[in-house]
Image (cartoon, rainbow, N blue to C red):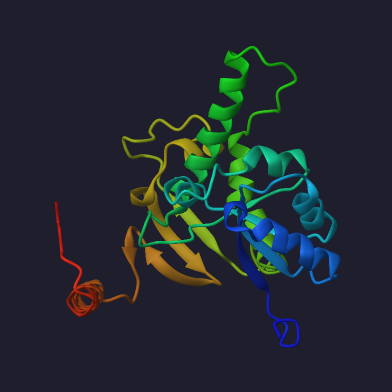
Length: 240
């Protein structure tokens, strides 16, 4: 049905829930393709699922904070890279973990390096290369656009593409003085450093303030929705 109406097929794949076997079966039936995007891909047994994803050129997206928090299994960064695949980054569940991409980048960067460093400390040889800040920034931008089949419109600053820009302040105490732009974005910056956002040429945030957004009204609606959910579900509210 998805292919009949030309929409992407986004699937959450968690091996410990039996999704690996389903993935292999779909591959044998010829139902996997480049219009598939696989979220998590954690806990998969053997190499067969990975070969199917690579051979059919589907996209892979890692939601590292969620995978570690919700017992999906270790984010499979080393496996993804070992198969020559390039992941994008996902936030997955905003009500469980923050959805900002600084967190996604920093988690992937530190986790992969921690895993490689631990192997080095055990005396292992022939270790995989550690991720660089340039790698991780590419995951968050170029690879995200590719996985969403939007590479012709966004993902890079290229003439002819939509003007999607994020301007970051580097004079705040959490980053100044700036020594390396890529390193600062991945390891130091946070949401408070986002100064200006332009989406398809339209200014959505300017000098630290959202444009055309009633924040007070939005907070009221969100709070009312939260209160309704607690009341109707009977779940007790515990602030602490």
